[in-house]
Length: 113
Image (cartoon, one colour):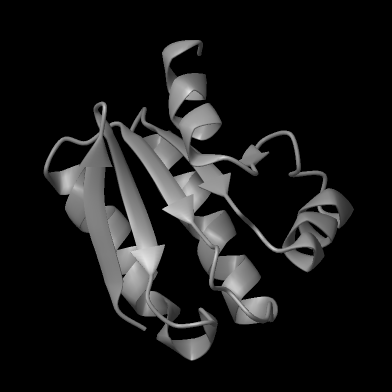
C-alpha cells in the first residue's frame, strides 16, 4: 500500500492507494509518523477505496490514533467502510475515532475541537 498525502486548510489528508491496509499497513504507520515528525497536528485518513477490513487494518488504525494522541495531535477518518465502524463500535472506539462521510465536514470538525 502506498499512502499519499495532501493538505487542505491546515489538515493533512492521508489516502491509502489500494483497497486494503492489511500487512502493508506499515505504510500508514510510516506516513503518520512522518506527518508527526513534520509537526502536523491535524490528520485525516481517507478510507474511500478500502475494500476489506482485517485485524491488521483495524490495528493500524487504532495504533495510528494512539500515536497521534500521544503527540497531542488529532485524527479523524473519512469514508470508512461500515464494517470498520462496526469493529470500532465493538471496541468502544467509535466516538474516540470520529468518522465522517464528507471530507469538507471532517476538515471543518478540526476547527471546532
